[in-house]
Length: 187
Image 1: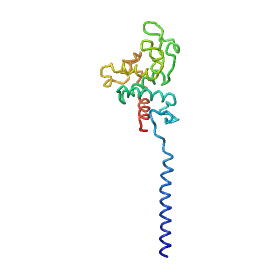
Image 2 (image 1 turned 90 degrees about the vertical axis):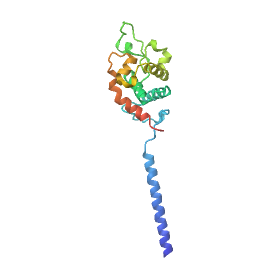
Image 3 (image 1 turned 30 degrees about the vertical axis):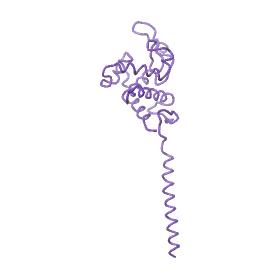
Image 4 (image 1 turned 180 degrees about the vertical axis):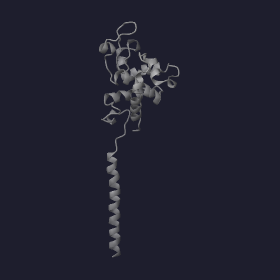
């Protein structure tokens, strides 16, 4: 009789142990996969704050470039904000002239292309159309803005991009923060 009770108790404990293991394993399968900045296949298919696919890949390139150049989170946010405002984080081969007939202040045709809508004086077409090189060109100029990290982010970007509206980029700040923070999670 004692032996039957011991065997029954062992079976109950074993069953409870299996259930305890089975529940966490099933919960683990429901957890989202960690995002890895260098692996776009880990990016959430539904996107972040309305930005997805190619846009998140371009944001990741901007962030990696910023990091490689010694810019932290604040610099990453500014780069992503800029590309959101200039190209909707798409590496486009056309700009303001083609879409709106917009000209430079001197009346010449704009030649802006790429993520940052950089004109020909920024570099060659190949440089401006390569997301990492375009980001490098942006950050090299941002680094020359005195106290860029201490001034309003949109104004800092304006000093690099020379947009007509110094406050233009402000509307992208919350989205840029959401994207940078989401892509900054540990793999």
